[in-house]
Structures are given as structure tokens and as C-alpha cells.
Image 1 (cartoon, rainbow, N blue to C red):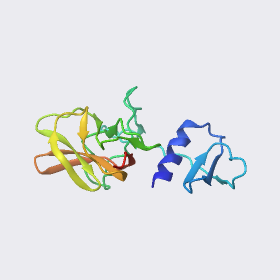
Image 2: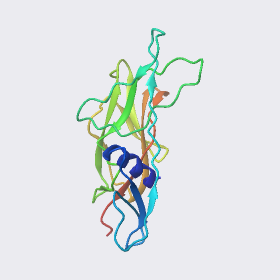
Image 3: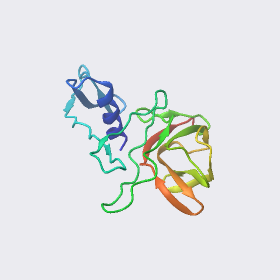
Image 4: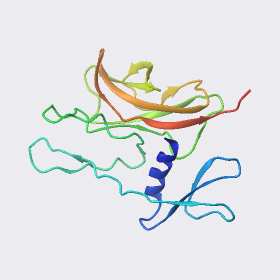
Length: 186
């Protein structure tokens, strides 16, 4: 899954005409580059165009593209859980994790780091957010959307999502973000 995220991230960073190459590095790991490495067999990768996600307006007019995230927030999670046709629209137009690198390993020597949540409209009433780490609820629900702490994560691959909850009811969940924790082994 990590290589797919890398390809996704590279598709934003490179011009539309750029070519991506996949190869095996000297340590035996799969690597990607915008230029083929010298003396190593590299396979060109065809990147598909990114989908355009549209949010239907509440007044019944034609859909318009979603607004970009506020500058500096760097949301990284995928779209929220989709709504089946004929059901009510999701209460949050934007629900995404922020401050979590996906194109490279997260270096956290003690396995601890913080993430944020980009939620729009803002939480109200008794609604709270909570993290879902590797498919399991992580920590307690909170109204805090900045500096959510994850502690003592094992090194390796993980997935993280955020839920908006009201008591025991899940209102909405973001898409999973896959990431890798890199930490010193003692």
C-alpha cells in the first residue's frame, strides 16, 4: 500500500508530463524516481489521472468541485465514508487527518507523535473526534482537533483514520491513511 501512496504523492509533485520509474535499490527495497538510476533496471510507471471529487450542494443545484483545504493544513486522509444513493448527505464536508507524512517514513524514536484533524463544519454540541489505529479505536473521544497524541507505536506499517462520534454513535469516518513508523530498535 505504501508504494501506491508514494505514487499518489508524486503525481501531485511532478508535472503532468513527468515519468516515474520503479526499481529495486541496493538494499533490495522497491524505490521510485523521476529519473531512471544508472546501472539499474527501471520500469516506467503509468500514472492514472486523479479523480475529481464533487460535493453535491444542499439546494439541488449542479454539483461543484470541493473547496481546497485551507493553506498550511496539509490534509492527508482520503474521502470520508461514501453515502449510498437515496440516503442523507454526510454532515461533514471535510474530515481528514493532518500533519502525518505519507510519502516517507515517520521518524519517531520513541514511537510517539501528534496529528491533527481538519473537520468542516466545526464540531458542535456533544460531537467529538477519536482516532482509529489499525482498525481499532485509539484513545478517548475529544473535542480537540490539534495535537492528538499517539504514543509508543511499534515500528512498521500502520493505518490511521478519524471518526466523528456522538456518544456511542459514529457520525462519520475519514478514509484510512497508511504510514510507516521508523524508530530506533533497542
